[in-house]
Length: 70
Image (cartoon, rainbow, N blue to C red; front, side, top):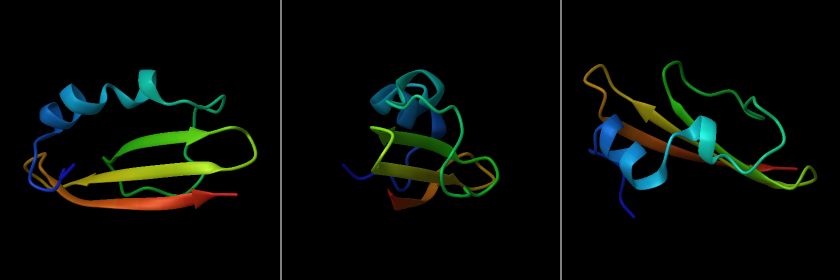
């Protein structure tokens, strides 16, 4: 799924609110995220993935970072 170019609202409609849809017992990012990013974290306490959806000044996705949680 291509997210770059989509608006914040479009991303949240596709993936849900990151505060409610993260599959993690932790309520904070494992890796630093750019200010204003949507952070999706999926882990099982030992490993997983974190996706930082970085937005530009117009609230459009400019980049998606994928980080391994270990």
